[in-house]
Length: 301
Ligand code: XIL
Image 1 (cartoon, rainbow, N blue to C red):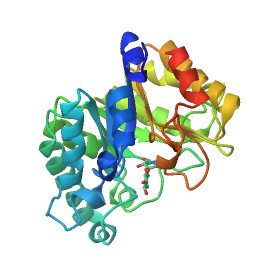
Image 2: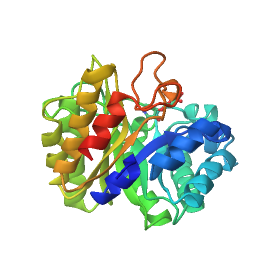
Image 3: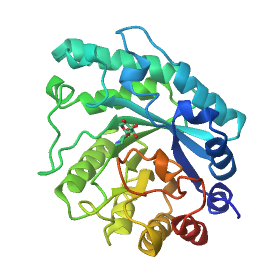
Image 4: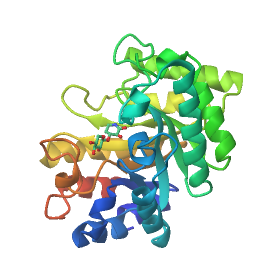
């Protein structure tokens, strides 16, 4: 193929990007989006603070614009994210206990119902594990009880039975890291007990502190062997030039080597679209030109 999306499709995969609704009026941005990508993830527009800024009052206009754009252009949508400790509205940050648990359940039900039938996969729970030690991250949601994650998954399944339901996290790429093992054990337990989980998302924000690990393919395969799909959900790689390109190529090769690695999403289109304050972590430069990293990805696909 001559584009990321077409080449990935030849391998039975999708190639996606994070999309910001306010950039859909940028012609360069939309031109690349429509040409190259077959999956979109709203970068912020489906988060709790965006969709329920006031308790019980739901605002979907920005997220709906992205979903409409995707549907009109033959792209699918990853929903992101239903339950997360970050980017909560102020009212939720101030809740705890049963009131917070009930608010989480209602939020998941409302949002997943609004988008029922339109989402390929939901990041049901995002970033619930601590950076070290292999246990849960402390958060207001975690303090409602250890079962908050499985409750979130059961609630999402009831609201949109056709969507794949994912657990998504970062720094779970290196098989030897305790955080990876913690998430792996949770997924294993969920599969053993029939908690409805279909996929695990690896954010894969690679940089000097958490570099692309040589055992990445092993990690993806070990999770897949639990009976879930794996997806690379927020890929960006610090660096530039041929070094960055080589790492992007390695990531693509690892995904293609794992039968249940169903697709790759990069976290933005141009370097200037990146959430990273500095650096050049994406596939297109600020002018929208293809970088060596783009060529490496296309070559591996
Ligand atoms: C980031 C967005 O890219 C930024 O625009 C926003 O200010 C903060 O969130 N992990 C995630 C994503 O799951 O939702 C985050 O997105 C990046 C880290």
